[in-house]
Image (cartoon, rainbow, N blue to C red):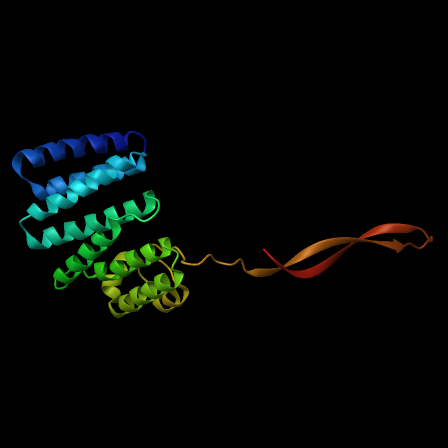
Length: 221
């Protein structure tokens, strides 16, 4: 979140940009403004308004005349809408599968567009999240494995979402989503700790006194 006062100001400019874009038919700007307003709505707890704004932004992408920009915007909005619905809806949401199917079609249509290669990986990430939501960990793990293996083949494109120096082999084996969240809970590592114990010992004068002793023990953190 920006420092105090920045968020309301950003919203003001987004609202102005949206109004001008609608007035003059600047569909790319309209879509971008909708995305930013949706993100602010969701962050501030107006989830339904934010999701509805993303739905509207998705319809606007159909009117962007530049094919490359249209595909970029479509993929970006599809991903954000899918993730918002997945996070903020309960049970089986009927929108998710059609959105994922449209995402796959958009990925295929943009395969030759430079700068959009990483969306191929993200398709597997979204499917993994859906399987995980349904409780099918095995299928989620398989999708994540495919994602990281594909990313390893295209490290330059993968750097957009995974960053430089990403360990693809470890991520594929361990099962981690694109944002680094592990699929399975990480078990705490065992470590040696010192445990203090008390025993009664006889001193030089024949009296029994308490004595603290330390015992190394392998226990869970």
